[in-house]
Image (tube, rainbow, N blue to C red):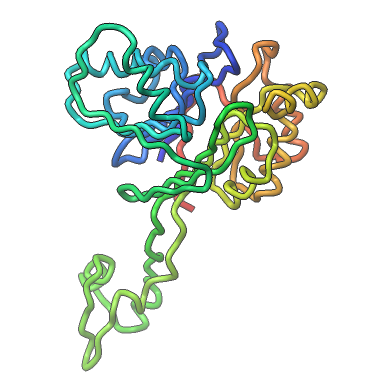
Length: 300
């Protein structure tokens, strides 16, 4: 599982940062979280390929989170895509995506299906699930939790040996096959630990601090939370439905997440170290994301 931050700017792009977009590679498929303007160009500079994108999850319909959609889809068409594309978003998704797809003259060469999700809804997909929560923003907005299906428990080799397992029988057990030992049978469940939770990524989109996002992020492997401003501008940021770096870190600490990435930085901040330092006071495992940063999410 790999995260690629394609754009980390807030509200509008800068020389250093493109508009909001994050690629999440699940190995079986690539999903895209938001699609601000310039996303297709960022793909070309990254380790990810836009032609592998199978699903797009849009948090809301402010321009810096979805205006890259028409260009991305048209580029997919020009590169002869035929595979279907599913686009998810808040309750106004069908209307807003429909408008975007009517921009300009081009021939759509592959099927697109739009799915509107209300806060609190979830969908079960191929090997993972996606849950939503209400974000605190002036327009309809949702946060997402992408979570792998639970993994089977770890194979206990010492226990297997104590039960008389030898040689190739280890591989047979690990593959899910029962093995005869003397007059008895050793089943895979006998030598496997308890199921392990899958890895999870929570993406807040634009939001003021809210308990709905905190609950969604509970014990997540990675939380990606917007951090538009520093603590001295918290009041103003919250009024516009945004958070400070400090508030994002406090939410991460309360939710007991494994790691926190800050994103969606106001153009006023040329350097991100002060925001990162501010957040690390509350949550030491904080990192300010930068455009084209790759991060591997390892299995616990």
